[in-house]
Structures are given as C-alpha cells and as structure tokens.
Image (cartoon, rainbow, N blue to C red):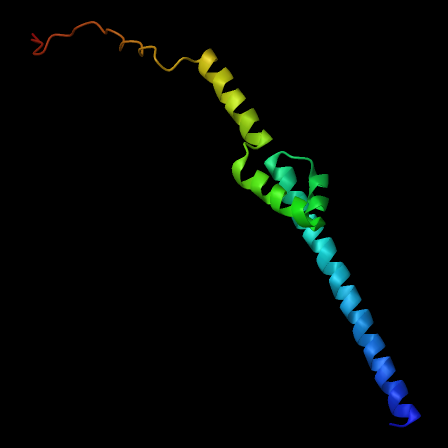
Length: 109
C-alpha cells in the first residue's frame, strides 16, 4: 500500500469511529432519559436510572421495579383507605322516599 491509500484508510476509520462514538453517546443519553421517566412514574427517584449502567445494580433495580411495591402504589392504597374511612361501603342505602298513596281508579264526577 502506498502512503495515500494508508491515509485514506486511516481517515475512513477515524470517521467511522467518530460516527460510532456519536451514535453510542446518543443511545446512552436516550437510555438514561427512558429509565429516568420509568423510575419517576413509578414514584422512585429518577436518578436511580444511572444505576442501569452498573453491572450488578442494573439487575437489582429491574428486580425492584418488578417485585417491590412502588411508592405511587403505596400512596394510592393510602388514599383508598382514607376514602373508605370517610365513606364506608357497608352501610345500607337509604330507603326510597315514601310518596302519598293515590287511589288506583279515581272516580271523576
């Protein structure tokens, strides 16, 4: 190989390396944003999304998301308990109002 082909090949590899680095960086940023939203909607701190890139911690965090009670669920259960104490469901409904009885066949004169 002559010097120009080597320079062209080196430039091509450098361009591919830069493109690969940009795509990788965008993918990492996208993954952090997606996991941040998932943790936030579940009621956890969004910064826990950064643990997805730690090798063992990512498995632990996914297991926590799958099997633990989410803070948002605990808050919902607490609100439901407060509502059931305010409006008990085992009380009977009030009876229908009693209207005055009208004759079945009124006689008109």
